[in-house]
Image (cartoon, rainbow, N blue to C red; front, side):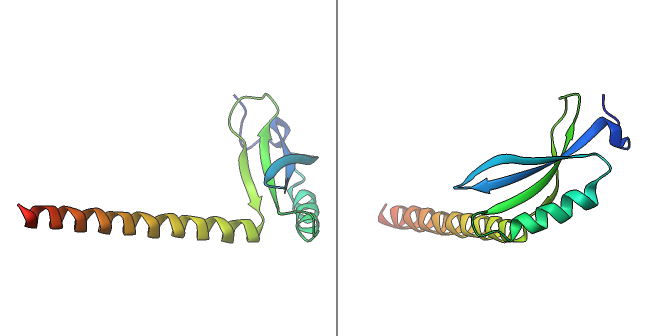
Length: 107
């Protein structure tokens, strides 16, 4: 099992989203987070790039990748989507309760 404290067990990958799909862009050594972050921030400014993230990936291939940095624009979009889902759920619950009350009143 990879030791999360040992940078030799991991590498950093930059993933770029274009047309709604993530694809690998570049790869850095595990201890080069500063360089990876700088590169990711530069990529995030490009007009044809929707979002960028830096992920830590185990060289052994076991274990899940961990997001180390995500584009601020993507974070804002994800929060907005989560809020919209919550509002839709609240509205659906209100409609269900209202329908149940009306059905109970008719009995």
